[in-house]
Length: 357
Image (cartoon, rainbow, N blue to C red; front, side):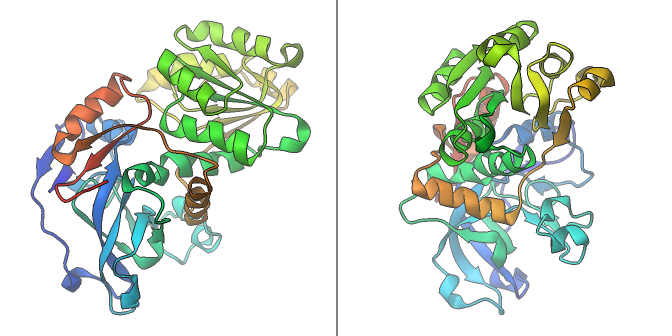
């Protein structure tokens, strides 16, 4: 059984699909029996047409963990039974981006699970052996599933934001749930940033961010007041040194930039979130950015090495995933409805019919 996408603005469906077999495997592939798969806002972007990659039908989901049940002819049978998390990009292995380890930028992807090829909101997934990264036995499947996007995206974005604990920097996470909670802990526990703030509309999410280590939390209900509130929390009203924008609406983006925006001098704005339509385009006048020598960078997905780092950090206890609830896979729409209404604190994790914690 799987959650299936049939095109933009069409309802996602729950269908019976063929279970992959050894006969389906390429020599370098494995089959993973999915034990848990986290829902992401990405699924909503597919459903409402924000994401339309021209491939349908496909199984959605890119945050899956499980157990290897079969291997291709080039893979040691010793891999069978390993507990793994799936890396969802499969690059061409020939371009300069793949050669650098940046498969997420490959222009000729062989697969991207849950985006242009079948993903992990299913009972089974077929994936290259190198993409099946072993997770510690101490990690429950439910807690491991959100690593696949929530933590890896944070790890990658922090690198692009050039986070530097030696410069007494202040960092801000704008929009706080899966990726945001990962960023807060990464900034505090891995990078050692002394002053980390969050902006969130939900009081429950602000409380969770503080529990996870954030130094201050700002109510983002009125986006027009956020920049001033952020500057009050930073030394001398300077604004922050690095800002991770995880929402992507016009109002939230506007509050980050400009002469009195939340971003300070030589600040780095890392764009992680996005919304559909011209109403949410990022627009700013260049003069403040030039005078303040600010930088804007986009951050997409993660590398395979980012995933391995994320697993390490969670295994060491430096980052913990936040799970709001678990539901049966056939209840996926209920979970997505809760994500759409922002009625969850942390990830909603789906359990296939054979799934177990």
